[in-house]
Every structure is written in C-alpha cells, then in structure tokens.
Amino acid sequence: MSDNTTVRSIAIIGGTGNLGAGLAMRWARAGYDITVGSRTSEKAESAAAELNARAGIDGIRGLENAAAAEAADLVVLTVPYAHQQDTLAVIKGGLDGKILIDVTVPLMPPKVRTAQVPPSGSAVKAAQEMLGDGVRVVSAFQNVAADHLEDLDHAIDCDVLVCGNDPDAREVVVGLAEAAGMRAWHAGRIENSIVAEALTSALIFMNARYKIAGAGIRITGEPQAGGD
Ligand SMILES: NC(=O)c1ccc[n+]([C@@H]2O[C@H](COP(=O)([O-])OP(=O)(O)OC[C@H]3O[C@@H](n4cnc5c(N)ncnc54)[C@H](OP(=O)(O)O)[C@@H]3O)[C@@H](O)[C@H]2O)c1
Image (cartoon, rainbow, N blue to C red; front, side, top):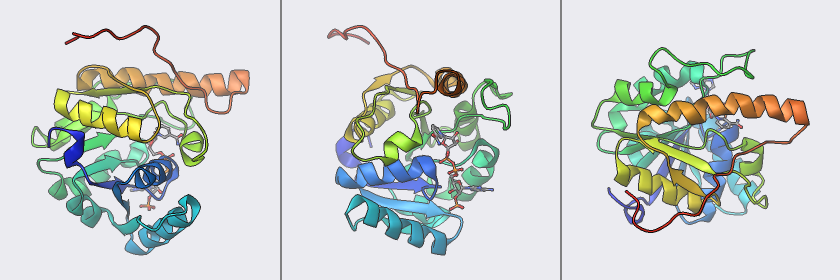
C-alpha cells in the first residue's frame, strides 16, 4: 500500500465514540467502505445503523474490534488514551502490513487543559513501538474537534498535522484527511506526534478561556514545489 488509490476499506476502532463517528460518516460519504469497530458486535451494529441514518447513506457496517481491523485495508484507532494499549493488543493480529492511524491524545482527566508527555515521549510513538515495524503507524487528527467532524455541513477550520516514519504512509493519510474535508501537512517522524498531542490541551484551555466552540490550528506560509 503506497498511495491513496489502494485504500478502499477503513476500520475505525472505537468508531462508536465521538471522534470516530465523524470520520466514519465523512469517509463513507467520500466513497470508502467503512467498518465501525466496538468491543461488542451489538454496539458496533447499532452505531453503524445510527451513523448511516445521520449521514443519509447505508454503507457503514459494524463489527467487533478485532474482526473490523482484520477486514480493512487501513485501520484507525479512536479510543481514550487510558485504553490505547489494551485495544492495540486486541487488534494487533489484524494490522500486519497495514497503516494504522492513531488519533490518541494523552489526556489524563481531570487535568485535560494541561499537556502530559507519556514516558515514551508521545502516545502515538508508544503505539509504533508496541506494534513494531510491520505496522506503519501515522499520527493525525489530534487537533480537530469531534463536534465539527460530526456536523457534516461544517467546513473544518483546522489543519491536520500528520506524523509518521514512512512518507508514503503519511501521504495516504494526508489524502484521507483531504477526503474528509481538511487540509493536512506532513509534519515529520513519529516523535513529532507529541507536538500535536500536547497542542490539544492548549486548545482545550483556549476553548474555555475564550468560549470558542472547538478551537483549531492553521499553518501559515505558501508551499513551493521541490520540498523534501
Ligand atoms: N473528542 C474529540 O474532540 C477528540 C479530538 C481529537 C482527538 N481525540 C482523541 O480521540 C480518541 C477518542 O476520543 P473520543 O472522544 O471519540 O472518545 P470516546 O467517545 O470517549 O470513546 C471512543 C470509544 O472508545 C471505546 N472505549 C471506551 N472505553 C473503553 C475501554 N475501557 N476499552 C476499550 N475501548 C473503550 C468505546 O467504544 P466501545 O464501547 O464501542 O468499545 C468508545 O465509543 C481519544 O484518544 C482522544 O484523545 C478526541
């Protein structure tokens, strides 16, 4: 898998929740085959039916997490930080050779307005270390508010920083972010994921300080041809 054209099916692990729901609906509308994963097949099927109804489509299906990961070309992890590693252990068998997009922000409630740096240096870097080189882990979407993603008529006013060790995998994710209505940027190796992860706590602080309904970020400057 080295470009966007080879990804047809996407599994969203924890897609029954806030962030996964918006991504599921937006990518399904863009023509991808979407499977919502859950710890139980009943909850997955019920969430898929609800998302199909909300998006006015019928292509989203639901499966238990391990089966969802196994069946898809590309897998997206959208569960709370406290359950990231446990959930990776459940789906690991279905990830070999695939791209895993990890949206995890290492929030440690109740101090969600204060950035936390995990012992590994980044939550998504820890995922890459746990899964090994056979899975290309890409970090993305940490700074996008779930409410905005779920509102399908909302033009997303937030850029996406895409970090990972494999440039081809990053390019796939840049394309998927664009397919879901966002501008996305290659932002370096997986170590750089901590920048996006930590920024989320600052955005949550600003939401409260300035009464913003989902603050986002924009990268300034005009890209020129010939970059590396
Ligand atoms: N919400 C946002 O605006 C936002 C923005 C950027 C990034 N993020 C990141 O995206 C991730 C998901 O956030 P969210 O707000 O979508 O989370 P969420 O709605 O609270 O949870 C997502 C899903 O995680 C699963 N889950 C809950 N407890 C679990 C457990 N004990 N073990 C395994 N799975 C469990 C649940 O799925 P089942 O019960 O169906 O298994 C749930 O529907 C987080 O890492 C968050 O930091 C969120």
